[in-house]
Amino acid sequence: MRLFLLSLLWRAAACDLRDMEEARLPASDLRRLRRAIVSGSPPGEEVFPITLTQISTIGRMHNLGPIKMRKRIPKIGSEPSRNEEIIRMYFDGLIVHFHLSPNDRTLAGLAQMLVGQPSTVLTTIEYEASWQLENLRNSFADAEIEFPGAIERTSGGAVELP
Image: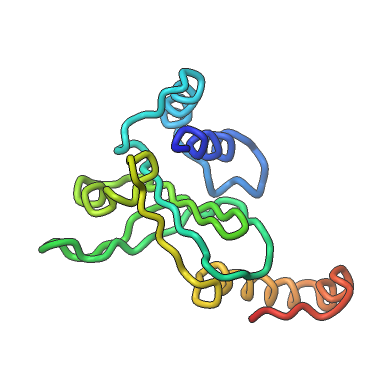
């Protein structure tokens, strides 16, 4: 599973599609990912550790290109909370976070949640409380401002979001 997800990251980072531009990685990282995929042997967990979150209630069906963003890592032990850069991919209810520069504290704190562990813990969130819904609402609002009435015309009627 880890190798498959890393192959999605490599594909997004290696292509020139506009929808994938936020997944750009340095050439050295692309080479490292490519070697791992070709050899069939994923790199250690310290290289792009991956966590998954499942949206547990049904929302509007859609996918979303990769987004580079900051993720809040909560306080662990005596260490303060901090933000960490990730690439976030969304596949109709499954959220994948590729951690770009984790430190040892992050790896230790996320250990049970990392894809590739013998028993990975999957976190869940309800669609109604998700960043995904908020982002979709903002995208619809932006589209309505830029292209008035286009969503309604192309969808066959008004689009309702919870």
